Length: 318
Image (cartoon, rainbow, N blue to C red; front, side, top):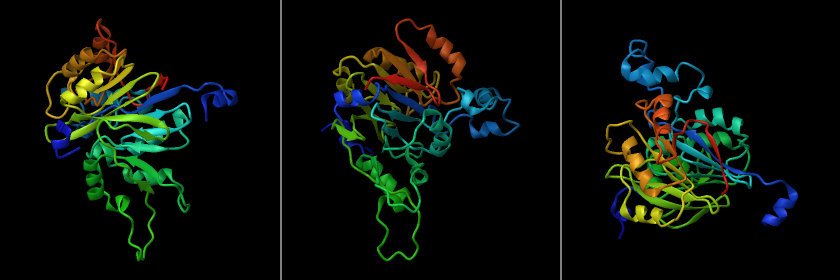
């Protein structure tokens, strides 16, 4: 039995081509920051804003968020497929803000599936806001939210009205999101809105398992947003994939260690081990200032690694 099982938290191409020109798939960083986000709320107080530890937060407040690479929401990724489907990985505390900011800029006109990595606030506390993407007063097909057992337990506890059917004799009819929660398991391929993905277990603190995801048949993308340790089963699986085209991996702090997340030195060590063509860091706290750390990363000669930022879109051939 693998580690994750014991932890408590766990149209044909030819026809299509004749109808319209080829359309590239994209992955879009809907959020690139930590659970707290940047700017840090503590640093918004005027008496704190000039503190050295609030420098990145100060920069995050210096221009509008759309133009500011230090302004970061909770980690989240939107996958836009060539078939015009939109799949969102994680809907955390900043989900609504990021939808309003980035969906129009990237011509998102539907949300076709949601995937949750784990049962923490920065991954699923925006579930209630999914109702705002569904037309009120209409019968809609329930949106699939793919989860593992542990995350479903957290959803049921936090949002029972979303995860459980309303009582038949309910006297008050409420507008809530119409959702279903298909279960997924580590290393078992599943299909979300026409895209095949494979969940891989990650240690997110020794008491919790978070899921990462592998997807893409032509170009392979690996998404590891919350990780403090990669279990041997997952590491062996990733090393056995062959060439990884895009790796997205957690990096909370610039130097100091953290019990539930990779910091930059650990992220770089892992990147060097799996040798992707390109790597992007996600989940950065305000300890990581975008321009300064980007300059440092650009000087590395053995890896191609960049900081992500909210709204960053990357073309991929899935």
